[in-house]
Image (cartoon, rainbow, N blue to C red; front, side, top):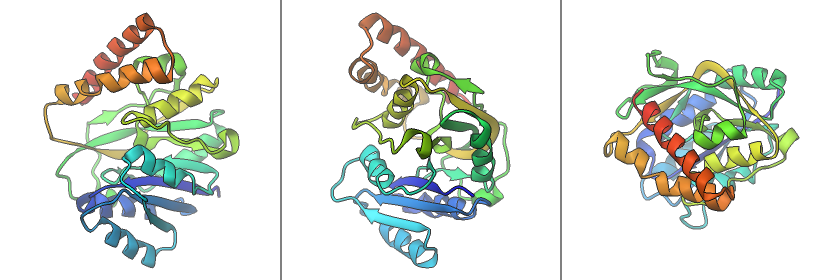
Length: 257
């Protein structure tokens, strides 16, 4: 059974953290380590993580030396990874119980070092556990295959479902960017010539937040996408413009699920 290193950044997540952690610890694939970086929370998040670690030695929390944002927190966790695979889950989302079992089996035959799955959306005020989640019609479907060109016009990979093969890729960190670090990591892997494979079965649950309108939330990412295309991917202005237009359209469409 392959060891999976699960990366989780935490910042003032006390309200949702328990359900997120339990969704990892109750996986049917039990050979895992949960690498949590607390990004200087001011609530009881770190106390909660310390108690989880006391009860289960697979939970390995650490405090960030300084507040650095989700990308740096993830990288601090990735640097500690010992697993064959690195998987990602944020502290307000959840995995369904057989997520890792299904995905590691899929990854073993997918002929791709990066895999992802479909996922459900849930309301922001959902207060249940992953084991009691009732499937709904709000599904973001995974494509069966995504390459670099397709990823430029839409981030097809839900970060809460992503998993990469450390044996094939080595330890890959997220680029140091204010936002869109996960998207930049997927692009960097694909730019090296790798495709990503998607499992169409929904195996995770994403918390859809209420703050602001859907359109304004998505449009606020435009400057970060532009910076990603121009500075990280080194695309020309015309190509960046085409990619950005496609990304905005696809993102607004997905937000209506």
